[in-house]
Image (tube, rainbow, N blue to C red; front, side):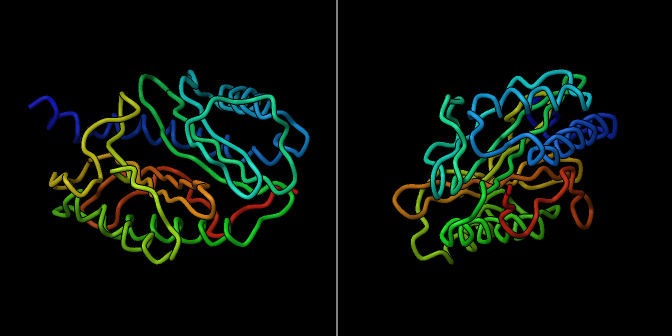
Length: 236
């Protein structure tokens, strides 16, 4: 009973989630201003936290990411002292909070130049997220939402990886019920706040993740995050 109550948010809860997602979106928009080639990744993390707090976040208790040549290998790694280098693909994933509620989404950038494999992976994940947005209607099950995103991921010949789910609920915890997975038959209802988080592996084990936050509505879902660019952004 508690789980069912927490999955559907009140208008007041949605307002808080909308606010923290806006703060997260504004912070991500500033990343090209402070993430440059030669900067240690740990300094990029620190700059992101400072920017989120300056935008009005109460805290940034969750911030992970990765950066490496032609793609990163780990999506939940802590920052290292390795400097960002031309040809890196950088990803930052934040769980910032405001008044007790979390956002949870990520963004990807290429440093200086983007390789073709990473561009393709980004395009597939952007379209998979779009498929998830289009499928997120009341009466759809989480398993069906998972299948809509996975069908696009399968278009990439060398796509691999099996994370088991492609998103989850969001609220007072970073990760809540339900899960977008083949085994979850939870039916979507208006007022559910969800992450859409398709991911894949490509090349020699590189990984890419894309994530947005939405509210299920009676018709088209409400996007809480500012939608990522359709093409992999390059930080010059």
